[in-house]
Length: 239
Ligand code: ATP
Image (spheres, rainbow, N blue to C red):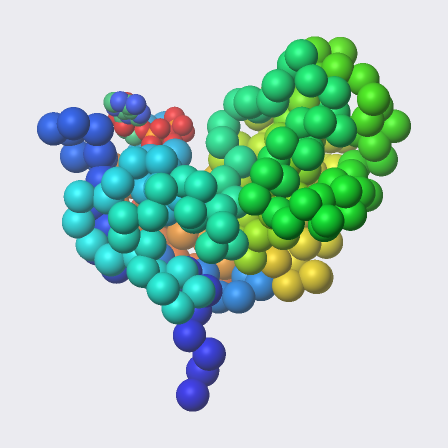
């Protein structure tokens, strides 16, 4: 039998107060798979990541991760289960050093392993590693973004969710972040990527889903030749 997927979402419904944003989302991510989630503004991509990582409780449906239900898990428990969520727009501690930012993110890692985990995360970002003793505030916006991704890595997640990691980054830095995704994939880490730079995201992905108005309207392999056409149709409700 095929191994069960790392993440399985069935009929996920979620929203804010009385506003329902997600209307029954089905999505599957295999171990070590890189999946891009596309969709127009307001489709519910960020909301879906929040529902998975426990930032908002789903109001319906079923989510399973690594063989267990995610129901009722808060963000910290989700991280402990192996799920890291790098939220949109960097949220680092500007008054703390780069090193301490990473150490804080390793809060739930056994003390004896923390330093090694910080080094492991820094190894992906030489530019940040050089500034390990500098305050977060001294980093450029792009470097802060990279630090936020590095924070997601210190817990050694089985699934890393990145919400628009390229936002505000120069093309060179975008490529660097996406190269990290490529390297993670080679190392067996699964990634769920929300990204506006469609072509660049697809180049590092195995599969793609498109979300429109809170529903999955397309699922395809990232290298499917007909994908641009299908995406366009899906966005306009014709798929
Ligand atoms: P974008 O690409 O613009 O970030 P998205 O696909 O990530 O879009 P969401 O951010 O998930 O979409 O937003 C989906 C809907 O939920 C939108 O209509 C948005 O206005 C609404 N929404 C998002 N966050 C909140 C919130 N905290 N409270 C109330 N409504 C919200």
